[in-house]
Image (cartoon, rainbow, N blue to C red; front, side, top):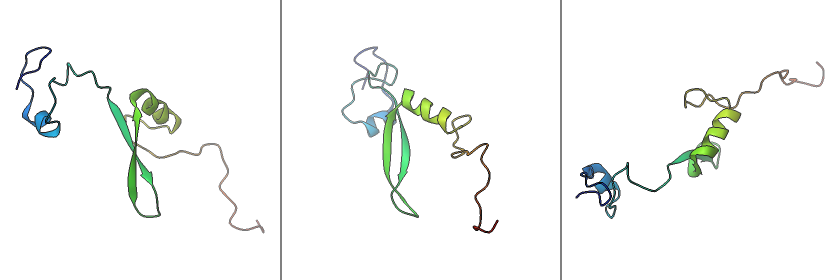
Length: 87
């Protein structure tokens, strides 16, 4: 199947993922999104929060993620918590 916008062939894997698509990736008008796992209990992720690329970049900056790989939330300039009230 060919793209209705540019005429290039639509890759087989795209057609498999999106059987009703009529455009290639380059011509698609759909905005790219990012997904973040949501922890809903102590040991498992059961949901994914989808956000725009702009929101994802803001979250990456806020959580000090470098190179797109999550390093987790960094707590800087804070003293470690006390282990007891007697310290």
